[in-house]
Image (cartoon, rainbow, N blue to C red; front, side, top):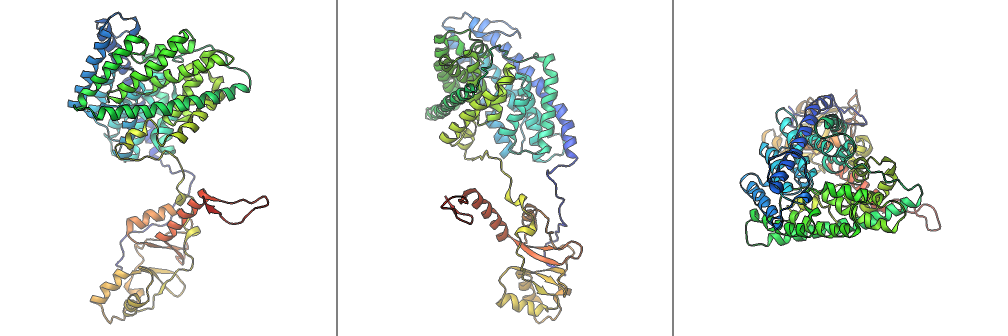
Amino acid sequence: MSLTPPRAVEGHQLADHSVDRRMIMLAAMAIVVGTGGAMGAWILVKLIAIATNLFWFGRLSADPVVITEASVGGLVVVIPVIGSLIVGLMARFGSDKIRGHGIPEAIETILFGESRLSLKVALLKPLSSAISIGSGGPFGAEGPIIMTGGAIGSLFAQCFHLSAAERKTLLVAGAAAGMTAIFGTPLAAILLAVEVLLFEWKPRSFVPVVVAALVSLAWRPWLIGSGPMFPMAAPTPDANWALFASAGIGLVVGLEASLLSTALYRVEDLFHRLPCHWMWWPAIGAIVVGLGGLVDAHVLGAGYASIEAILSGSLALRVIAALLVVKAVVWLVALGSGTSGGVLAPLLILGGSAGFLLGQFLPGDAGFWAMVGMAGIMSGAMRAPMTGAIFAVELTGHFDAIPCTIAAAGGAYAVSVLLMRRSILTEKIARRGRHILQEYTVDPLDLLQAGQIMTRTAATLPGTMTVDAAVAFFAAEAVHRSYPVVDAEGRLLGLVSRTDALLWQSERLGDQTPLSDAVSDAMQPVAYPDTPSGVVADLIIESGIGRIPIVEPGTRRVLGILSRHDLLKARSANRRAELGRTRYVGPRATAGLGNPA
């Protein structure tokens, strides 16, 4: 009778990707999620318009309006405070998950909450964001719609028997659909999903996200409108120097993104020191917003009209310079207060303003360089370089500018990762005690098969050994906790462990039964030489057996043993490949893996 746990794995199908037919099911479900994300975006846009009309024009209307057209006098200081008081009350007595950017909360739910968002968040997040933005909060709709679209995808997923990974796929699909509907940027939404939200690149998640984004794009002309959100006619400079100029702007706005992120969390720290409940913080921050509105009304609200004016060059230099400074101050204070709002639209204004001002010293249209600055600051602040590069050109329809936006995004990304340990999104999560690594790498255990790292000279016990002899062996000679038992041809009969020997010592002392009769391989965990090492690692965890026999297919002849130590050696080899430095050409060439830096 075998005393080992009754688990076994008979090999593993090797393929380039881990995918099955459930991907098709998720893609079909993404059609519903994409529609829900588009509808959620439409509702959010209408709610913002209603709130803006109510707060600034005193009328009930869903027609789009611009806050700068309102004439309210000194009430410009009071209105943001009223809106923020309402948001604070909603967060206190509704759900505190509506506070903040929206994207960090979505990331946290994905990684630590099994991708389960509540109906309360799905309802309160767009409503609170609409009140915040409509009352003058200097935010955009992208963070709230990502959270809202994600909540729609998560709620739909929770209606079915799905894994946490599958719920994550539909949550992110909803977020991508919402972003696509708002901005008309399907490719950037898909890239944002990959670079920021999914934390993987697998067909199971990628295909449904693509489906949801495209479904949302199909709905957009009927709900919000078609074409680029900020079309611009500025020509792209047709010269190589434009790439270097774009990279230079990227370096500058990358530094700007780092300073903004640092300042934001310094402001947040100051609010945490206030001797009052956090419910009141948004109203306190809104006082600064209102004062900023007195200086320049362009800093109030989402600022999409300001983005369009920057790109078209219709604003005076002094207005853009003031917008750069005042918008930064009111946005940092408002967001640091913990109210509900997004980061993307303010970043576009700040990066676009910086690019426009730098463009005064460069040939070509300053609006073009503003677009380049937008690509750079999104890349540097959110650590999403490809999203930033593509988002800027999709927003403007300026696809021939992709080389320049990539140069800017690359430069800003390089500066950001060198200067900051975390992005403006992940810093909030880290402050809650949860560290996130945003680097996608292939697990070294998934690159290696069991036969490549197993111990080939496996120590085994013969099936003819008696139970009494096995007890004596484990008491005096055994080096490992378990040993494969083999017949005369080396075929696996089973596994005997130290635990087995201890039981036999107390129950079967003097037993002359051969091990071939005392053990069984019926449910013995085994693996084949081509089994991925990661599968063997999972088998070790599931079975509790630390040494898995590697057998020859068909004959089940033992070829080696794969232990926990062997798996750790594979990880160590990968670490040496990362850090070991060796010179192979030149007067000081050396051989080997080199020494870690």
